[in-house]
Amino acid sequence: MKQIKIAPSMLSADFSRFGEEVVLTAESGADLLHLDVMDGSFVKNISFGPKFIKEARPYTKAVFDAHLMIVNPWNYIERFAEAGSDIITVHYEACKDRLKSTLRAIKSLGVKCGAVINPDTEVSAIKDVIEECDMLLLMSVFPGFGGQKFIPEVLPKIEEAARLIESTGKGIDLEIDGGITLENVKAVKDAGANVIVAGSTVFKEKDRADIIRKLREI
Ligand code: DX5
Ligand code: ZN
Image 1 (cartoon, rainbow, N blue to C red):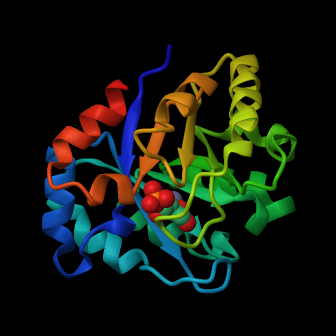
Image 2 (image 1 turned 90 degrees about the horizontal axis):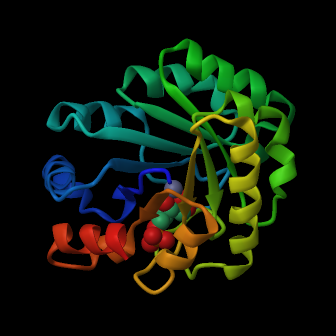
């Protein structure tokens, strides 16, 4: 059994006091801090860029998990690496034929890498690059906004992705992102995911440590 890791999505944090939010979330037991980067082009929303991450970096030693929802991500990975990302994930849909080279470029910068697929992309799309990945991220909502409803059709894809990872014999993390709640987190884990992103579920609660513990233990 792989270790269950909880990755609060900082998209739901108060950006006017982001440094404090980072400290509080890390101290509440988060294993990774999930940083959603949106460019208004790959997705219909704009969040923040490398400068924002760089300025948050001194506040914590927690693992920064940068989820790039941007077009032409290869043009920016160096800046996200320099900003202090520990892992950078890029979308298959944004890279297509350049996915493998982009993953390798991330690794060459000394940063862990991962591929992301949207709810309507088959797991088979990333079969050829799975060996390059430290993490595979499956979206359980269409990316762009926090607070959306979990798409249950993704559950069999989690099982399929878990089998693909198993076949590599490598301890590749399987992350799930979008609409995770206390009600569906068990099904997601049972299907084989071990890294759980949760934005609104974590940030709507006053006691962040308690909700992170519940998400981990359920
Ligand atoms: C969606 C983002 C998610 C999102 C998660 O585009 O990638 O990380 O912020 O938020 P919740 O948990 O509220 O769906
Ligand atoms: Zn995300």
